[in-house]
Image 1: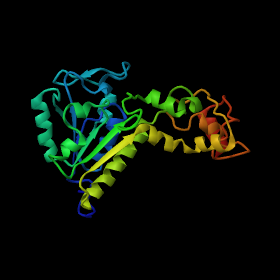
Image 2: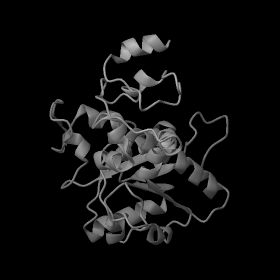
Image 3: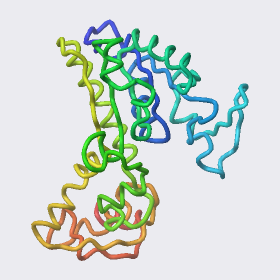
Image 4: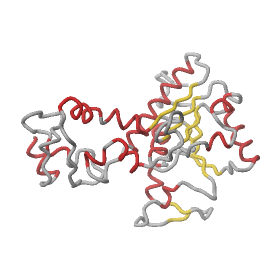
Length: 275
């Protein structure tokens, strides 16, 4: 599946992916696989299309020939994918999906807790149709454990991990880095199947991905007792906005000195000061 043959330009040439992935993290992951050469088919339903189609009301609202609304943001994050509409609430729809799974290498989902199981499409059930299947389940808090049934969104994941306290209320979330981790995990799963693993199930909690990224902040708080001090985010969505301003604190340098973080200045000026 994972091609190392120099004759193939694409790493994942010939790999087939079915994706229930939605919004940002759930689309970034299959998007990366598609642009590595995989044939990715995105699955939606007419009564509940991907919320990303209408996420930003300030974007131009467009309509596909089917009448389904869409938007530039949706188009950008689902490029390189094919699309299909399957009603998973109907027996015919579930049968169609299972038939596709037989000829599929990867299934991706970041649906609410219990959705796949309610359709009779858990990993164990899908493996009966395809023993070599790689399945990635992307959730907020994992599919097992005391928080497995919690519904998760970017904001409450950030709150749970402390990102909101460290870097202000909004502007930076873990969606993109979760999608990247998910794609990497799928590639690793395909390599395992190539080595004769009996199928691979990847239970990836977005909180675990986020906690790994925030490890330096946790370590500084635990080891040095420094408090997290939130400041306004001058460049919403930029990874280093706010954080970059105190990266040269005299006591720590880099990693960051959280206690001495200033609240003024701009991203550009601070970056110039650093360089």
